[in-house]
Image 1 (cartoon, rainbow, N blue to C red):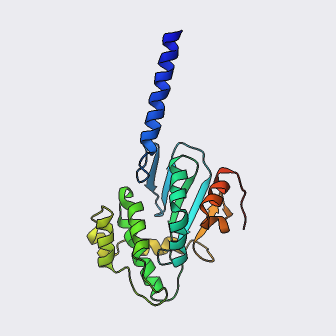
Image 2 (tube, rainbow, N blue to C red; image 1 turned 180 degrees about the vertical axis):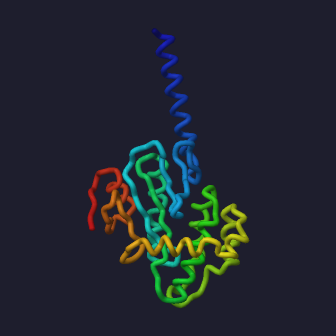
Image 3 (cartoon, rainbow, N blue to C red; image 1 turned 90 degrees about the horizontal axis):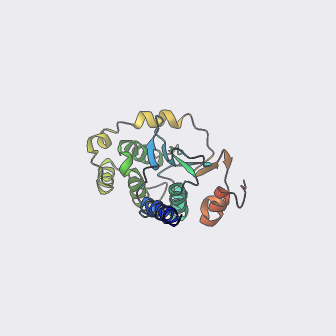
Length: 214
């Protein structure tokens, strides 16, 4: 009986150690939780075998409010996804109609489609770091800036970025989306309000502790 108990304890300790290893590096996915690109270009960060609530994140890389949201809650979103508590679907869209914002947005989103899954989250961080400013005036996200950002994120996709190979596909998918603005966060289809900018409130909404407000 004692030998069996010791064996169980050792097995549990081993499993716990594996769990720590799986989530000890916030920038990497475990074997169960990974980032995958969908046919429509959206990126899913989730435990593919889990049954967590779905958080859809619609963002325009030239949107300064999206940048603000990213800074405030992205670490929380990614942590919850890696803990298997939420399935996150990132949707890059072009919400702006006026220039130079529209072209800025298209170039950035098209470049993001070139970047492989292993570097995509880091590239997304780089995009927000080099977002053109002041908003509505500055042109930016030039192809050379985007090439540099991709390389910094660990991806060499120079020709794809320079050719804007996915610009048309991005615009085609964006045309299917009906949004009043960005960022837009939907939790199991329900529109989130102020929680989208408050990491603690967002976590409560996702884990069932605070409900959803519009």
